[in-house]
Image (cartoon, rainbow, N blue to C red; front, side, top):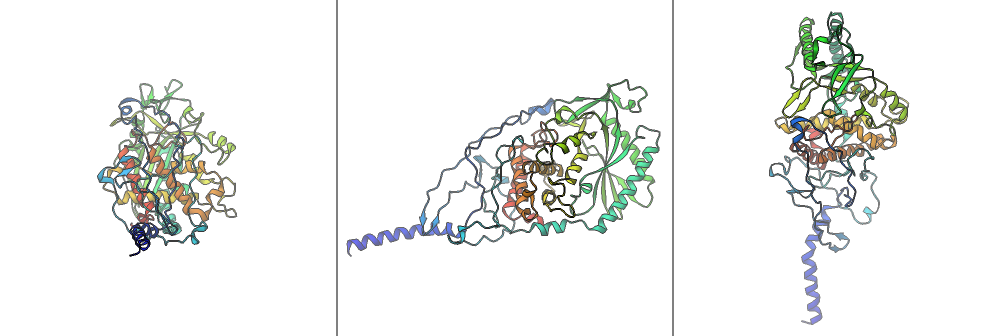
Length: 521
């Protein structure tokens, strides 16, 4: 054979051997990922202040180098080989335990159609934008998606958030029936407490929680009611520099004070006061006619007295005793409520003039609780934030422009609720609650203050931004209390690392597969 033809034949065979590899990458189509800047500075994490046995656990973290060798790029007829993904059992330079490498299998949406160079020249209007970095002061550094799994993201539009929200919408008839029953119970208890010659004669109602914030999902079956009691001239003694938990003392001699019987070493005992309040409520619900109602067992460390209405429909009512103080907010809240660029400094000033509340929530000391402590509560302020959530004064009013803020919060609450239902026999999700989701949501509102960043047509993108932020908080083990920045809701003495890793992996899996859990229950 002619030497030149022999050389051409060998060259053709080499190209043919490489073709399957190139073709395999071409078939997969474009990969929608958020790039991770390699040299982005990480914001310094504030030192966590602990007290007692709880301070010994989880105070240090090892930093792992992030990176992977670049694969050799191969070009053939417009196709380019991609960077090799990390091994299935490695996440950001760390080994993943075999038991949590991959969540249970769920049906995956079809892979997107491969586009040609000509078709891919312009960015699709439905393709998600890159997520912006959080504002300074949140303490989380660059906002990056957690990378527990290097799976392909589902094509935009693979799941329908509006259809999910329609399923979660409360029906007017259901709302009316539930509210009527709950109001009968609560109004009766309020009248009885005010007629008592007791320590709780001065209580009044403060309705809070998701139902009254208009972000309740699925069914009107849970209500939160505060019985507030004004306590003038109190002095707060911060517990172990937590910023959130306090001992309550009276500035004057408490003789003649109706709460004097609850004093313990000059401190107002949260456990004694809650016990007496619980006893009165338990006796009074026996006298409520035509309603089948019981009191659930006391939950360790919980400030709530939970009543269960069993007929005509099952409804849970959390009754919380709260001390009302009209003095200045504690110093630990000075840098909190970061709404100046979102709702304005005037709104912030007016909100800080409102009273603050203390609920009998006990601080945790290792495996025990300090039962004499009270925790700050700003649920009434949270209700105001959700009610007037827009930067423009007409946001979501009848003649105003609709935003998707509340819709994003509902979807986030539903995601956590569905995961807790799916893994009901797993203890890893026990310590997570809707308050964590709501706190993260408020931080995203601070990060994206403009109404134009929450347009109704961008619901899927805005929800993805909320999920991204929450995942980043789980990954960094840091979720700052919105009113008390020094209090970390995701510290290891609050929630262990294994639980946070488990939830992170489950949410990443749902996100990468079009949220199949939304349709499972």
